[in-house]
Amino acid sequence: METVVEAPVVEQKWPYQSDRVHLLPYVEGSRSNVFHEDFLFLLHRQCKEEGILEILFPGMPFVTVARFVAYLKDRPVLVGLIKPESRVAGFGFLYEVEGNDESRKATCGFCFFKEWWGTPEIREISRICLKYWFKEVKLKVLFGTTLWRNKLAVRFAKNLGFESIGRVPKFFYKDGKLEDMHFLYLTPENFIGEL
Image 1: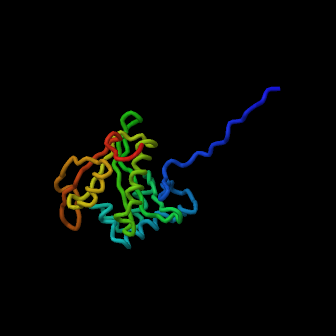
Image 2: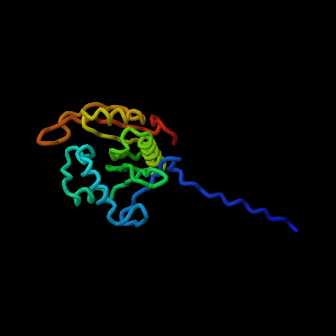
Image 3: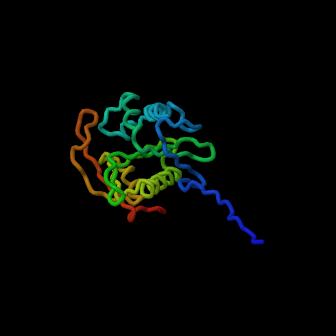
């Protein structure tokens, strides 16, 4: 009689997490303990209460919750959670996604809530978001924009491997005046993190 040896069942771990943080893709209409039906409304409320809407969307008049929800609901949004309570620390999103598997590009945005500013957790969430976008979305290049005067965002991006393209004059319309933009880009080869 021949002995049959069964392969052990190996539980596959979600690769987009660490000991401290967990990344979850948000899919509009998908209900869970984290994403209830008014999740985007709650994100808007927190961004508004913390006064970070204008930092997140410079030059875009997102004064209403309806515009915020309409903007994010069909975009690839990744939500960063802090373990073990699964508290939302922030989110990343893509827009202007174009191309195919050999030459796909996108522009990204990140938003982190003030409680987590300057913490290792948001650096970790950002790296995991970038890893997800390079591996799962198969991006070959990722662009980022911020106000020229937002030196903290530029330094944060450069610590992830983003390179400066430079200054684009009068790109954003904010508070009744035109403001310059800092334009950055990142490729998988320049990413400072593990792919």
